[in-house]
Amino acid sequence: MSTQTLPSAPPAATTAGGSRLPLLDVLRGAAILGTLMTNVWIFAAPGAEWGVLTGATGSPSFDSFPHALEAVLRLLANGKFLALLTVLFGVGLAIQYASAERRGQPWPGRYRWRALFLFFEGTVHFVLIFAWDVLMGYAVTALLVASLLTRSVKARNRVMWWLGGLHLALMLLFTAVLAGADGGAAGKVDDGVRELYAHGGWDEQIAFRLENALALRMEPVLTFPLLVFLFLLGVRLFRAGAFGPDATGRRIRSRLLAWGLGLGLPISVLSSLAGPELFLLDRYIGGPLTALGYLGLTGFLLDRVRRPGPLLTGLTSVGRTALSGYVLQNLLCMLAAYGIGLGLTERLGDDWHPWWVIALWTVVCAILMLGSSLWLRRFSHGPLEQVQRWALRR
Image (cartoon, rainbow, N blue to C red; front, side):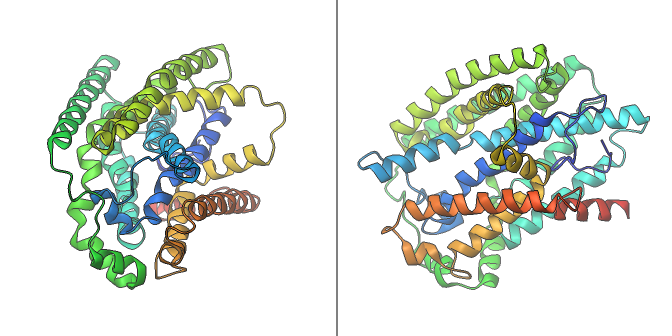
């Protein structure tokens, strides 16, 4: 694997010895499209990005079939694929460390520049496209975890479990605070914010993000312990052989499937049904656990595929162009939902909800899978991945 690769999009999912691991590309592609399944409801909600902070994106309801379908889709995606993507970032970091070690290169060395460039890309993405960007948080986390890779296994495990416990304690504390708070204003978005995303200009939306950057950037700050935990977990799983096609990999994935879905999904379901006050338990506790189950389930299914079809090929292509796909999917949703583009949120509203949102997700997924497959026929990396390589060579 080339050491020019950034943690966001390794061009080849490989072992420490350099052999390819197809499962990693498939997982990365599934994580990108699954993250879109969460974000698409944000684009389609009143107040869009700001609506998340006020609860305007809604809570699960089963009073009709359309509402029940939406609730199930959101439940299956909320926090799960984002956590999976975070674990895979840790895997990518472990791969790059192994590559540098094989080549006798210093570590972190030039990797710091890669992480800083990723932070720059995330900042541009946050300002111009989507307030709930994950790249900035990943870049900061990568800088810390990269230094931890030079420490002993015992030291890394101590940091991982200590931060995991801290995250669990914080989420329980915040949940208790939310449960005891007055929720009378929940679900209400200021008319000016609704108007901004329905009819405002792009420059106005950019100004709004910058003015409210502290609130909109709060998630990676509050969940930083979880980010570090999942990065280190990805490193640990990779070094244990969890992504290999051998018996060891299958055994680890079977355990992840059983424990992840067995613990994570019940937590997510119960916390979702209990009400929006337990949102944090679903997204930040049930989500990461279920993500490990998704990892095991994907591996279980891939082990039984004898002939790759269009779906598997598309997921693999999206996984190999993950950074480009992540930014492009948010750009397409912005142009489809906001008033600066088609304005579907305002035009279709509740009359076609949730069908038009599901259709938007389906269309964007198809564009990403087809577009990335065609792109990789001529190029070895995605567009933004090539920009990264060019910039870092200079």
